[in-house]
Structure formats: C-alpha cells, structure tokens
Image (tube, rainbow, N blue to C red; front, side, top):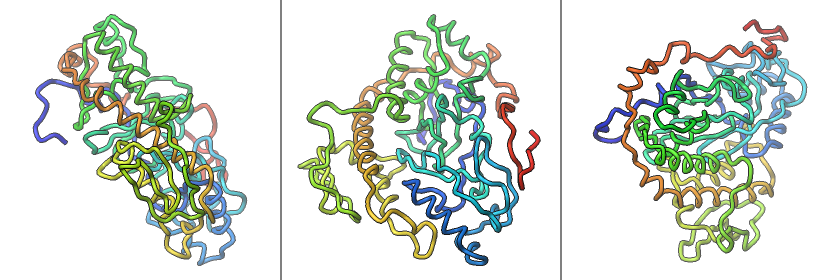
Length: 385
C-alpha cells in the first residue's frame, strides 16, 4: 500500500465491479495437484481405506468431515453421499489457478472443500474473466479464466451470469464512459483498463482522453491475454525462445539460475535462454519460477494423500515451464509501458456519484440468480434455489 493517499478522486474497484466473492478455501492440500493422475490416485487411496484410516487421510476440519452433508457443486459430477460411505470414481479434475501464474488441477467435489464458493462455479466458463485482488504493489490485480483458488484477496468476476451475460459493472458505467470518451466502451475493455492502471490501494483512475483510453485498453488487453493464456500461445522472438538444452532428470530436486549464461538449472538439466527478468519476476515477494518448481517437487509428509504424486517429472510440466518463462519475460517487457501509463482520474468518484452511477445499488453487490440447471443437494436430493 502507498504510504500517502493519492491526491485525486479515483473510484474504488470495489464500486466499479460491485459483486465480489471471497477466495475459495480448500482447507486441505491433497485435492489440488499439478497433475490430474495424482488426484485420481489419491481419491482411490482414500476410498480403499477403512475407518478410521479414511478419516486420518481425509484430514478433517471444522468445516468438513467424512460425515458432512453438502450438495454437488454447480455443473459438477461428484457424488453427494457422505464421504464415510462414498464409492465410485473420482470426479473429473478441473484446471484452476492455484497460485500466481501456477495452473494446477482440483477435484471438483464439494465434500472435499471447506469453502468452495458455489456462486463462482455457477458463472465459470470459457467467457469468464476473474479479477483477483492481491496485496502486491506491482500486481494489485491478477486475471484468469480459471477458477482461482489462490488465497490473496477478493475475486471479481466480469460476468454475473454464464455465457458472458450481465456484466459485473456499476449500472450505467459503460454508457457514461462511452458518452465521455466518444468511443464505444465494451465490458471487456474494463478489466483490460483495470489491469493496466489499478493502483496498490485498488483505486482505478478513469480518463476522459479517448486516445489515452485506447492505448491503455490495448496495453491491458495484452496483459490480460498473457495472464489468461487463451487463444494463440505466447512466443518470444526467434533466438530468445527457451529450450531444453540438457535433459531434465526424472526427479529434479534443485533449481538454480546462471545470469551470465541465462540458464535455468534443474539439477543437471538445463533450460535456456531464460531472461533475468523472468527469473527475478516476483509476486508478493516470492519468485514465481521458484514457487512453481517448489509446488511440484517439495516432499509432502509421508503417509498423507498429498505424498501421492508422479514417479517421475511428467513431460507436460516441461512444456508448462517453457510457457511460464515466456509469459514472465513478455510481461516484464511491458513494465516500462505500464509504468508510463499513469493517467489522472479525470472521471472521479464524485462525478460518478452526481451521475447516479455510484454508489452501485445493493442488488449489484449480490450474486445473480442462476437457474439454468438443477443442482443436486446432499444424498441425491435436488437443491431448491
């Protein structure tokens, strides 16, 4: 957070995107893993164990035990009988954002998660953009199309309903910006602008300069594309693309970096070129590459479900590592442009209040009613929404 407040009237992101949800809280580590095969093996191990071994493996909490009665997650396929007598295969793992820039897999089973936030699952699809607040000065916002399970700050979906319906924006904001700028402002322009201009205190300056707006949105869309990693895969220019120069060992244990050779060392394995900016890239004071590697190699306590993992380094992890290096390098290259984009808030909170846009109506801070399919409650009963 800045030591002194900003001297303009920039509105709060919390008012511009009124509906937010607390971070998903799994409560236990083992339902999340960097590879889906490990999750299926952990589930099978849990179900093969008898009581009380199953209870110890599950790692109960105040929110979840083997006897908790909860409904199925929206659009999910997991069972709803109590885990003490659960049978059947593991629910198909889904991709999630488990940490900044770290995409992993999660068993989408409500019985395994202390606070699953079903309202997020109802609106999660390929059109969704989740903005995630962080306490990091350089990255006050992250963005993802995946369900975010990282424990940082509030999650703000761009859309309140599936299929990109009902934007989660203060009513009237899009029309007001369109009128003031003289250019059509779309819902997707807003998260792009927010990513490019949001401040550490989670205020967002709004400009009335159409040229500045267009350049900021274009820059923010580039950031958004790199964070979501959808569509065309990001690539560095020829000669700067990272490759595996020496094969990675079956079970690498150490990660190091040689800045002179721009080489990443995974034991005797080598990946290069890796720009120093990618190696030094941090979120919340933690190197992203080191955290990513640690989450895949740090040993778990013996005898726990989290200790069940791949016998050797899976090939998809190498591809993910190369893409992560690319993304971090490209984001680092955008930093000078982002630093130069410091617009004053010409459209301040006071103007938005006079226009009746702020404060947003109380209903806009609550989730929309999504009733496009029935949801199964505990023990196979359909939930009434």
